[in-house]
Length: 77
Image 1 (cartoon, helix red, strand yellow):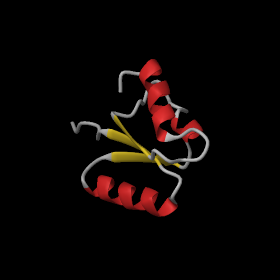
Image 2 (cartoon, helix red, strand yellow):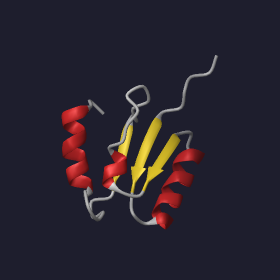
Image 3 (cartoon, helix red, strand yellow):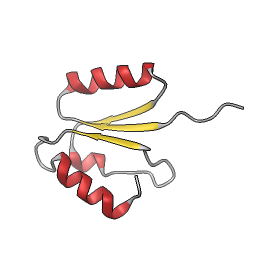
Image 4 (cartoon, one colour):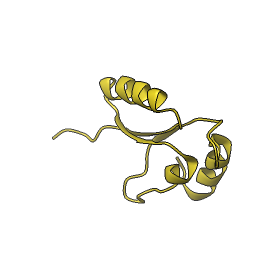
C-alpha cells in the first residue's frame, strides 16, 4: 500500500512561476495545487489541507502575508 504524496499549495500571480514551481515540486514527489490569487488560496477542502503553502508576497488583492495571517487563524498548516 503506497502512502499519499505530501500536498503543497502554490499561490502566485505569475503563470511562469506557477508552472516552474509545480514542475520542480511534482518531480520531487509532491502533489501540487496551484492558484493565481490569495482569495483562491484560502478556498480549502477541510479533508485535503495542504501540508505546506508557498505564497507570493506581492500578489494583487490579498498578498501572501495576509493569506498567511488568515491561514494561521484557520489551520495548523
